[in-house]
Length: 339
Image (cartoon, rainbow, N blue to C red):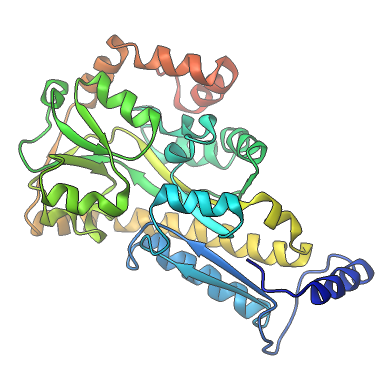
């Protein structure tokens, strides 16, 4: 929460009314007037944490230390559901969350993660930076949260297993797979006749290590930085969903910040989100090589067979009905016909 006394807050409000919403341009160091907490669920070495740290440093520098964003990565403040609760209460100012997990609060958020919808970033980024992303952000705002303009990259999700490779839809039958707490994940893997298990990411490694779950699904970079290769044998390049991280703020807290502070914070977080995407793209091929070297047996799969299974199971019909025709039309404007 902002560390302001009532008197100091009143003083700043009066000063802001007189001076107007000019962007902060402070060149000498000051004690922080705004101390804001930002949290995520990725390891310190993950590009999300790396580039959020760069944004925090840039914000601190441009404001001469007046705005101090303190980062708490790697589930230091709890699991995703815990941190979302803290964000909503105002105990946490910024938090990055998968759109599909955010869907437990904002159902429309998961539309970007429809199974096998995207076949490349040339369609994805224009959609998420354009009308589809704007549609989702508007729904997020209605929930009392604020979403920054640029969504951060997590990546296309792949399937790993400790028991058998997943090469065709039938291989999912009865497969105990960890999924995040999200209705769409559960729905999709049930359509494959798998046995999805909802587990927060903070507990994934131990669940795989103790064989509570046979497998899981995540982008390559997170599989690498979270060292999931230590407790998995096979990786199937299913590319079944694209996933990102919305950077969220408590709506009331965000609206309560002076305009000049919001301008600086948004500028650097959005800029670093784009830089993080570019870094993730550069890492893709080397990350796969690293995972092979660490012992994962990596195989390509026929994604069309998996998509056909979802179609026959009624997955697309179900979710088109949930999102509504207008939102689905926005999605297919960029992806082309899905089902």
